[in-house]
Length: 192
Length: 192
DNA sequence: CGTATTTCTTAACTTAAGTGAACGAGTTTT
DNA sequence: AAAACTCGTTCACTTAAGTTAAGAAATACG
Image (cartoon, rainbow over all chains, first blue to last red; front, side):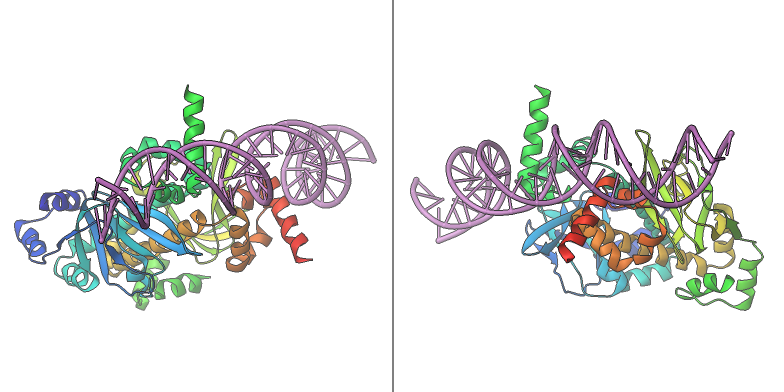
C-alpha cells in the first residue's frame, strides 16, 4: 500500500530511505468506509487527500439537489479549495467506496517542504501538471455534447461507469439522471 | 507598465531591487497587434504569457469551426499545455485586441528559479491557486445552464461581453452563436 | 424474510439548443 | 463605388435535454 504512494512520488522526484522514513513516520494512512463524509460545506479543513485505493467524490448541494463534479480514484491527489484559500468549503467530499487514503494537513506539508526542499519542487510540478490536465478536460467539456462526453468517459475512465451510481455520473456529465438513461438507450438503439 | 507585473508578483512574494532588476534585464515585454497568432496547433512552444494590457484567447478548430475556450485579460497568466507536457499544442492562441504582454520561455524560468528560490515558491502557490480557481469555474460550468452561465458572466466579467465578438463568447459558453442571440433576446423579453 | 428506500428506467410533455437559411449592417477588398 | 466578407440577428424546423410522474429493480435494514 505504501508502495503506491512512493510509486506516485517517484514520478516526480527520487527519495532516499531517510526521506521515505520521514514520510512514513507522519502516520498518514487512513481507512474510510463507503458513505463517510470527509468534508462538509461551510467547514474550514486543512486536509489534503491521496487515494491509494477506492473512490471519493466532490459534490455540491444546489436547490436541495446533489451535483457531483469530480471523482478521485487510485493515484489521484486532491487538495480542497478551502485549504488553499482558507475560506469555508463550498462543497462536500465523500467516499463512494470503502477506501484507503493518505490524509495530510497543511502544517505537515509546510514542515516537510522546509525539511526537504525537493517537495516544494514536486508540489509545483504536480500543481502545474494538474492545472494543464484540468484545462484540457474543461476544454473538452465545453466543446462537446453530453453524449460525446459519455462516450469519451467510456474510453477514458471505463471503471467509473461500473463503480459509481448513475445519478452521480449524470451530474458529472452535466445532465439529469433521466437524460443519461435516455442517452444510453439511444446509443444502444443505434448500435443494433 | 512594469508596475503591473511587480504588483502582480507582490501578491505572492516580496522582491528586492536587485531581483526586480534581474527580471527587467530579461527584456520580457512585447507589444502584439490584434489578430496576431501567438501559438498554432501542432507547434511546440516554450513560451508563457502574462497579460499587462489587452486580451488573448485560446481556441480549438473542430470540424473546421473555431471553439474558444478561454480568455486572458489584464493580470492573467497563461502557461500553455504544450510547455508543461512538451507535446505539440492542441490549440491556438491569438490576440483579441492590441495587447502588451510579457513573454518568458521555460529556460529563463528555470534560470530565475534557481537564482531566486523564492520564485519556485511563487510558482507553486500560483499554480495551486489557479488550479483551485479553475476547478470552481469548471464546477460552476457543469452545474449550470447556458443562460445561467451568461448571466454569471455579466456579473463576473462584464468587460468580456463588450470587448469580445459574440461568436467567440458563444463557444466560451458552450453554445452556438445563434443560441446566444436567442438567449439574449429571451432575457430582454423577460425583463420588459 | 419482508418491508422500506434508493436507484434506474420509461413515458408524455415542455423547453431550449442545434441546424440551415436568409437578411441587413458594417468592413474590407479590389 | 461595387463586390465580397464578416458578423450578428431572426425564423422555421429538428433534436435533445428538463420536468413530472409512475413503475420496476436492486439494496439496505429491521
